[in-house]
Amino acid sequence: MITLPRLYAVLDASKFPDTRAICVFAEELVAGGLTLLQYRNKNGSAREMLEQSRELKRHLPNSVQLIMNDRPDLCLAAGFDGVHVGQDDLSPEGARKVIGDSFTLGVSTHNPAQTRIADKSAADYIAIGPVFVTPAKVNPDPVVGLDGVRAARALTRKPLVAIGGITRANCLSVIEAGADSVAVISDLLLGARKSAEEFFRILR
Image 1: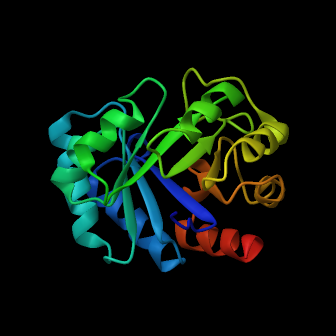
Image 2 (image 1 turned 30 degrees about the vertical axis):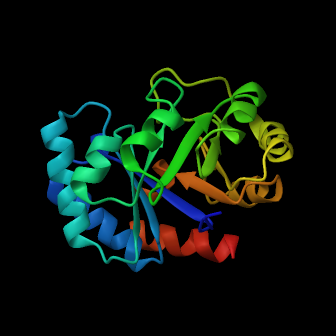
């Protein structure tokens, strides 16, 4: 079973003007103590995603785990450490066939039924959310709240990542509800290094 750090950063490529800005942001997060980063690009071409992913890999130390969102094929091509799939993406079993057993595999869930299925799947960890209202998605799933985190915790012994509207102000309550790690997008964007350091101070 994998051990997740308290802070799981999600790098949304749409928030940055170019590849260089993405890499600078990632380097700042790592300087703040980050050890796990998911690269997400919902709108880019496969070529753009591969280019940006390889640049991230080149700029960051090997001690940082890099997770590819949605695309197990690009995970392998970019030399990443794992892949994260959603409910509308390739199934965990399908992703596992692509990446093999030595790579990390995560899956998103949004309700107890999905969490039960994910618990029996090939996934190494499970994400639950959105915990709070989030601006990160155009058509988000219904908010699950802290009760949703507690319910997910009761349904699985796999590492649990909470995602959706998580900030420095509410992250501790999410951990106390049973999450092993919090996935954060927006609350890391301004002052990445300082923000990461503050998250770790709160969550240690």
